[in-house]
View 1 (cartoon, rainbow, N blue to C red):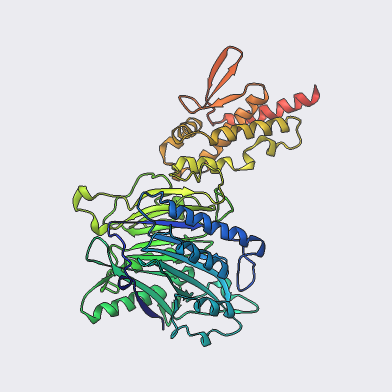
View 2: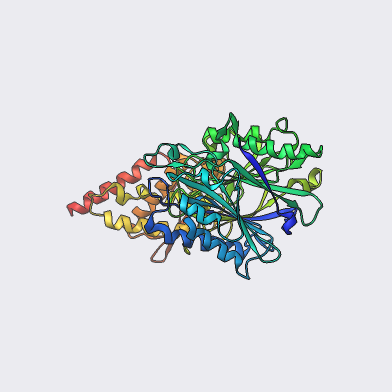
Length: 526
């Protein structure tokens, strides 16, 4: 059995606005010791602390435009032990950290001694009944999430919740076993601008799909809230549910298949979820912004009843086949952040109940989404602002070494010259604005203009490769180009002559690479 433990933040003076709340989600690249208790690698722990600092700096800076960041979320296992916990506590205790705010953070594996030390710290609470310390055995480790809040008095309080259900990697171990928690905290209060209750809770990754006594953990959560609502014959909302993940397959059918039953109003009818915001916060799939096949895909999921579906918003897509690999959530609004590499997301979440009816209330679920870098990385995919889809897509394509002629023709004499030309073209293209990049790809591919960048596939990728090959050959022939994407892809200046150039992919693709190979052979023979 899993108990739901209520925490009355309202009694402590913590309130949140009903219309919009501001969130910052860290998406760091985590390097683990691949053995239980699954901690950050020792040589990476300093970087882990720096990721915390960078994320908290974004939260303090309020790039979303709100007066403060109401929720800051660190995914599962992203805080390096007690040192990571202390880093957040100290930051929140500082005078410049605003009151009535929450930080949620997943801590990497703790031994029993470390967990005991954590829960005995000042202003720290844990479920001393369901998770009493004598239940944690010496051979067990604890994977937990900590929820902090800064009270109007300036005091910082925290609550520690162990993970409930181990993932396969946490079961398939040789030396230790993961302690399985027995309770979920539900934090409640009243909104600051309306006499209406709010509630939120957090689950750790596999808890979203895991079971105890034949019930999903989210079912235990809703059952507990519903039981409390039944005590006064009413209904209660679940305003926000955070799922902090370290998940290599965030769009796996097992995860996606739980969304619809979770939102089903026929189940647990005393818990209203039509206005619930489900926040999936995951770690990164690579150490810097770029294309990744695993991890990432942090997302915000809401019902479709109140929000419109955008066409091609900056920073996030609509999920579905282009991002999820299938239309698992076609009856929901699924805002999936495109960047799967290391970064920090910031955004505003609109509470649907505050929207007026009809066209006057037509809104999109997220506002002011932005992507921020770790460690000051200079990358157009993490510009401390919005990232149009075409900017993300093109820059991911430009990362591919295979698109360089120098990679394909390693044995030919013009290889070095082609490699230098390729790098210069890549550097120039990365500086182009979104409209110019869109024009450049549309000129290169006859199919690109028929769809959005989220739907571009291999054909458009080959068109970018053809573009890079073509201009590399031209530069090797002493015809360097300046990219601009304005009416053409680039301009070539030769003496007094100016040429506007477009490279269009078609049957000529093979001809262009053949030209390079022939030119190399001629150079070698001269």
